[in-house]
Amino acid sequence: MSELATYNFAYLDEQTKRMIRRAILKAIAIPGYQVPFASREMPMPYGWGTGGVQITAAIIGPKDVLKVIDQGADDTTNAVSIRAFFQKVANVAVTTHTADATIIQTRHRIPEAKLKENQVLVYQVPIPEPLRFLEPRETETRKMHALEEYGLMHVKLYEDIARNGRIATTYAYPVKVAGRYVMDPSPTPKFDNPKMHLSDALQLFGAGREKRIYAVPPYTEVVSLDFEDHPFEVQRFDKPCALCGAEEVYLDEVILDDKGGRMFVCSDTDHCEDRRAHGHVGAMLATEAAE
Amino acid sequence: MSTTPLLKVKDISKFYGGRTGCRDVSFELWPGEVLAIVGESGSGKTTLLNCISTRLLPTTGSVEYHMRDGVYRDLFRMNEAERRFLMRTDWGFVHQNPADGLRMTVSAGANVGERLMAVGNRHYGNIRETAIDWLGRVEIDADRVDDQPRAFSGGMRQRLQIARNLVTGPRLVFMDEPTGGLDVSVQARLLDLVRGLVHDLGLSAIIVTHDLAVARLLSHRMMVMKDGQVIEQGLTDRVLDDPREPYTQLLVSSILQV
Image 1 (spheres, chains in turn blue, purple):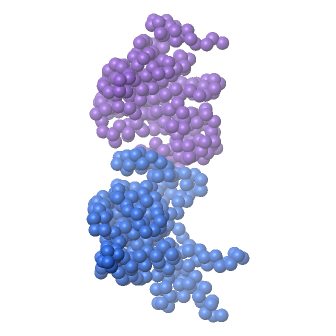
Image 2 (tube, rainbow over the protein chains, first blue to last red):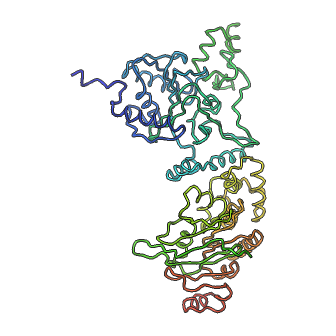
């Protein structure tokens, strides 16, 4: 009775995991190429990370340590529920520390701490096709990928400069992987694009609704597209993190009141906590302590 | 004039199941020559144009193109990558409806610049400068460079489409009813412009039209089609002034005289 009622390890049945693993292996073999796979219904709505969850379920083992982040934070709804899901269906250890994790499932950020060789970063991807908004026909975009016709991607960047005077795309910034496929790095801020380049960790991308898996193997070239006279640049922030004083990290703006009060804090909560534990103090914490 | 044809079309036929699109069409197109294909609607003009421009696969026949390196290549024996590269560099295709040939949601400058970026141009300033230059050549003001074609009139859209096609310096341009849907004064201006560009750039062109006035103004030579077959061809002035086939005589005499 109770035998029947339990789930298979990591929720998905073994045949499904096998199918997903095959897709993952193919994706790793052809960096940046979108491999179709038979995406399953998951016990969460599309848009909540069904693609990422399926990849994680297919690669996770009993000894893995899982970390889940949503917009850099470990404590937001999406991260908490996916973490709880795998605790329940796979009984694996979970962590919020980037350094301790073997699998990190992420929505929209790459952790600030440098990833290592034994780690896998799993991205949740809403729209895997970088050319989609310029070319609505799937038959045509596949052909463009096959024939390496990527002029259209620069049309988008051209439009950006024509309208805004600079490349105003700040997230889902297109990259070329291993000198071949143009890839959408999922809606991560372009601040994180350089971290994908020659990364020590394996990066896997899952799009559940669109039924696509793609990958960037470790130590693969990932180059952000740009123009010669408008080179790729990452966002800069005027102030360091208000809590931990970190510079050169990605910051979130937090509105404090309706009188224009605001603060900028690390989007990567683990990174921020870790720095504070090591005695770094940002401007806002320092004034609070003084009061 | 050069002694070798730019395009050799041999026995092109296209059947849609039991129906005939076009049958046994052969001709040669010479560098700098403008050829008009005329006939009533349903006579197979557009099918023929699509077959020659590799947008459709003909049932039988071959089309050989004189490449820039001097050799003839059979278009249907090239691989798709080569064919598409040829189409966006050495050829142009002007659609009847500009919305089919333009990207309506990106600016005029990006529309013109797309081909440049497709062949690897990665300098924004240069692309923009070239785009503005080409807009000028098709009589669109430079301050419209950042407007989307949606904000353009029909005539402007058609001129933008022409600029977009000519920016890579093609040698052969296909036009499918380029003046269809435009009012007569705009048509006249467009024809004038096309005639000037064809002459200045030494383009070869194949123009499909049902409007004999367009053929008269633009083309050196014309082919008259009926029921998928070419029934008469010759120099434009000869065909129009001295039509031999009864159908051509009918066609010429159907022109409204104002």
